[in-house]
Amino acid sequence: MGACGDDEPGAGPVDVPDAQPDNSVRLPPPSNRDSGIAPPPPPDAGRRDGGDAGDGAPNDSGSDDSGADDSGLPDDSGLPDDSGLPEDSGSDTGAPNDSGSDTGSPDSGGGGNGPLGSGPLSIVYAGANVGVEARQLHAWTFAGNELSAWSALAPATDSFNRGAASVTGEGVDNGVVAWGRWHDGAATYNAQSFTWTTHGGAAYAIGQRPQAIPLTGSFTMTTAGTIAGFVADGSGPPGSTSGNATLLFTGGGGVRLGVSLQVFAGSAIYNVQSSGGTGNPSISELTMDAEGFVFAEYTISAATSYCAGSCSVRIRGFIGGAACNYAALAVQVFKTAAGDDGSSTGVIVFER
Image 1 (spheres, one colour):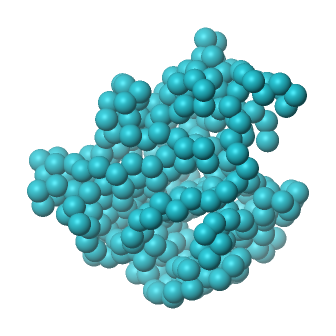
Image 2 (cartoon, rainbow, N blue to C red):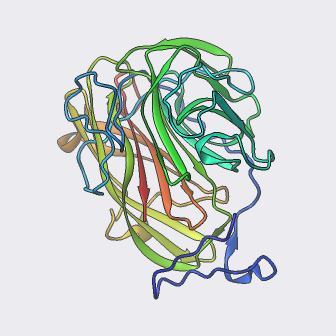
Image 3 (spheres, one colour):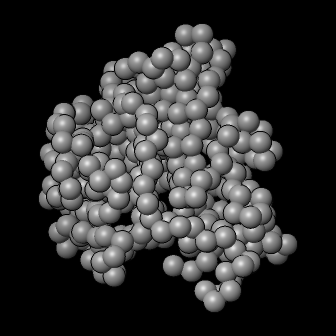
């Protein structure tokens, strides 16, 4: 994959040949990271190309391509897992390159790996039974544009197989990032099986990992796709997820993401904003690490988020694409600081 660069005048990114990497910062080869977050329960989603599979959820228009900020950021909860490479449940969306199940891995060298090619790929996911996590992948299986199974580089024991569960709200952007929500059926996560409800489940975003980072520049991002906000235990209808983001390259490999998000799940609306919001991303908690991931945990007040005193917010995400022009986030909001089964989840993908 080529070095991340930007074609916007004055932005400062540098496209450097492999022989002279001194003007860009190279990311290390895929490794692993454990975010150490515990799981919640299930809900429903939306998508960029049409939204969720009609469950009548309010305001579930799917992903917002307009980049409009704040329209309710839902999340899902509950991902099953498997042992090793998950297998395809046989669902077929009729999407291009869908010849059954397509399996890929970072060293498979191309072809037959679903809509995102041979990787390397990263994934973020959140929902019932799976918590909210970010992983670099060892292998993955698609059925059309639907992610059916995956196994992580590390911990090597982390894996998922959707089994009999369905995928809703699935979408793909430019062969770089894909998203969807697993729900309505039995699945397996890390060798533990469970069954998700129609409005519950877990949402994911999976995408190509960048190999280098522009030196400097600040870029406004718009929405490429979303998974509508949902209540982890499936107790309410899905709503919507929306927001704005600003991506800041600070030099020397430093990357910060400023966000202003809204998750609407059940009857609750949660407004989530990083420190500085989109106007001053230099103080955001969402700072990219050496593996291309961003992590943040903080609280929001009852006045704006239907919380019992305060809500605990957990965000996991990755920066992706050969030009470092995508950011994918999984957001989970707990009604109390300690967390509970009434958590709400949403996934949003930004592009610049």
